[in-house]
Length: 463
Image (tube, rainbow, N blue to C red; front, top):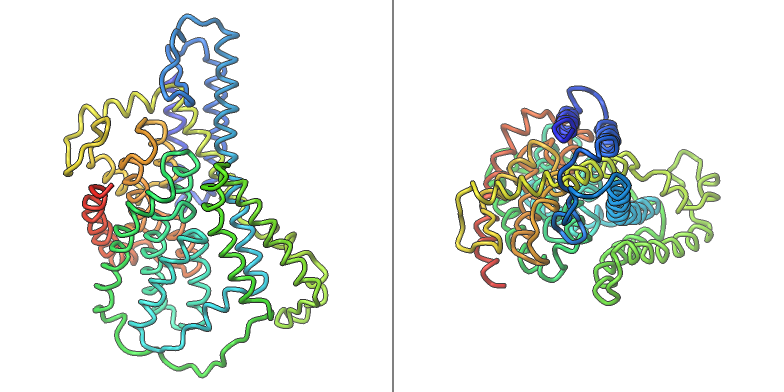
């Protein structure tokens, strides 16, 4: 039965990886894989020789001697535990996505566009690289990529020029998301899973992530694509659609940044702070909306839109397929973890892989394993890889292993355009060809990834 569950997982995993070829949204195989895996566990509960206790992070003592009812009770408790942990991540993401949509409702991101006055391609490259690095740490790399490419489309009208900038935005956004607990789904998973703390995460990864962004941007600034000035198309600068644009931008970003502070002070789970942040932003959104908020640019529909709640409007625009995908993949990985499969795989890795690096981890996990995980995240989704690592390794909180996983999974996905959420959304927005990205951008991402890895080997010796 265990072999059948692993087969279901592998088939589902392949379907997720090949979603563009199969033309099936990855949330579908993720949900099916999750449901079938747990159904097979329930049906074959009496045939399993061991059970993994996720709370104590070890195998359940005397599991083989337990009767059917006791095993079913343990399975139900484990399922509820994993659903609770997964729900923490999903509610957190829902809150963050809604705040970003509220900012967009008030056209808040147009404030960022107004800062860009230059026509020099190299200057624009550096502006967008730093914006992507900083914004992704606050509003997550996926959202930062959507925002910046949307701004890019208003500044650069030649698509052949624009896709080069989009490629570097992907690298910078993934690098920026790696060092912040709210910058990437995988980092958020490690933070909510109590594997890393905000202070140590920033301490370990800020410099490696910065180098991971700076090196590719520096090399790219010498490439022909970034030479010269942008052509002047004579278009007038657009004004923000609301007088509250800047206010809502700073309020929304400030509310999201407040979440890690709230967690540090209260020791409550991060989703509680995110719900408070959403509540505060929503209050101001409703007040400003009632104050005759005008959307004159929306084809004369301003009167209708002004009567709607900005919060309800924003909730209707959040990307629910991503939320369901995370639910499916995290619960499917939890099924493998509960059977002790990941625990056994981790033990095999620790025994068979050679040691690398100047520092050894607590339980002898090789640096090579984590580097391969980073490279693997470019080929397959980094969410299940990090979810699997949570079940594979049992190092304590803030062990350097977790920080290295956060860096590798977060930045390694830049090496292929399908390797990260930022890359996939950029691919969709700009219709970037997989092989174009592979030829032009992938080597820059690889150089940045390796440069940041070397810097991490140094920063981890400081703690």
